[in-house]
Image (tube, rainbow, N blue to C red; front, top):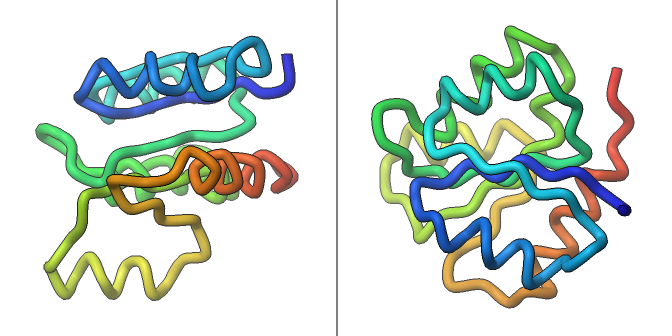
Length: 124
């Protein structure tokens, strides 16, 4: 196994996509809610976290901010997925971070490269 990835998305087919994309190279752990994902990061270690920007209740931005407070530096392991955004606040957020942003629909190679990039980031 090469990586352990946490996937946060309210669409269950995303987990299956990751299994198809990475096969035996990864262990995929999935969460559909930000609070569940935060709990998983308290009890498990991940090489990369792929997080949809638009989630029910709390957003991907909320996850990033809470993870940064809970475990500073770990937020650099996040790859964001989105179908797009128009809010100026969200644009400012992405202007202020270095995390990869993969727009849906995406090429599988683009997603793989983004995961590979954050998996290489050392944890503190």
